[in-house]
Length: 141
View 1 (cartoon, rainbow, N blue to C red):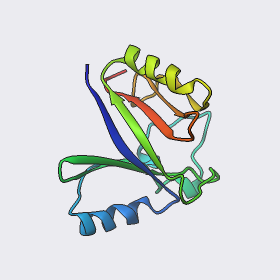
View 2 (cartoon, rainbow, N blue to C red):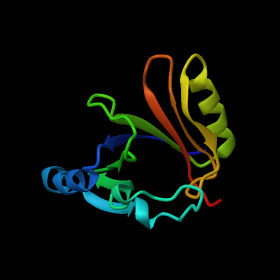
View 3 (spheres, one colour):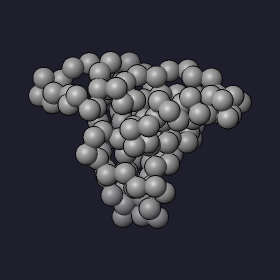
């Protein structure tokens, strides 16, 4: 079983600018970047124009550490101070479910753990201490 904790920065429409900044300031190497308009289309939820160029997900390497980041979707609340989450990356869906359930006890589920186009088990939760976690399971759907 593999488990990693990864800092995850949530930006308010300026993730592309942040990527460039961290590349220069921290010598970060961009490993992956995808905008919302590069994601698979969902006819039930058409993509608004103002969302298309925002970053849906990016991964950078800073030294020996990965840092992930994305933009909020237009209209989602964003407040300085809560834009950093911890992404728990696992390679086991059952382990992801167990951690998600434990973190959910007396916490608030912000996205139920579910299969997505990028993960067999992904969800987000704020634990009872106010810490924001994303649970990401590696693997193909």
